[in-house]
Image (cartoon, rainbow, N blue to C red):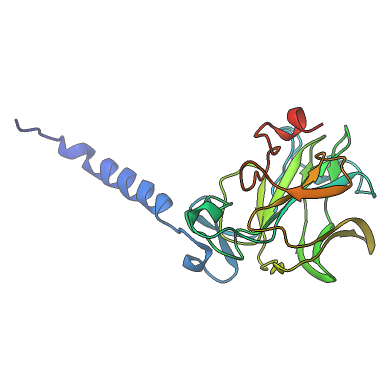
Length: 227
């Protein structure tokens, strides 16, 4: 059986084909992009923060107040990335000992919090600074050490966290004040999570899965399953 194509529509078909392929194949890892860019959801983009909030909250000025101690907490950390593809926590198709490290931060309040100026520190070394992220009430944001992620509440650091597998401290700092900190020790290749989540004072090894960035350990949404 033979098919014929109207020559008049060929230019449109070629344009559609190449524009689609260009977007899909633009990058697979950040190494495919310029040094100032990161690979996010298959496209090279300048490292930036996202509005992790309701759709009508597009402006940081309308977001609310800056964080104070107790407003936001570190809920989960992956510092010892599991071997093989089971360690691909950001789901970019590549297991990387640095890119797949992450810090999950949760807003404990029933109001929006403006994270602009908040820093994630490895010990005393600043690794990531939020610029315009508006974190919705009881919402979460996950910062990965690199690579890319399709999570709607994911951000990508342009500096590797470089967490030590043998133990260390992760801190949230705003305007020179410590908002939260976690002193961790080696437990094995899996994330550590608060127990109980959000409110707990101790961390345990994640289970039964290896990690759950952006979700409760039981797989449910943060705002409905962890509080």
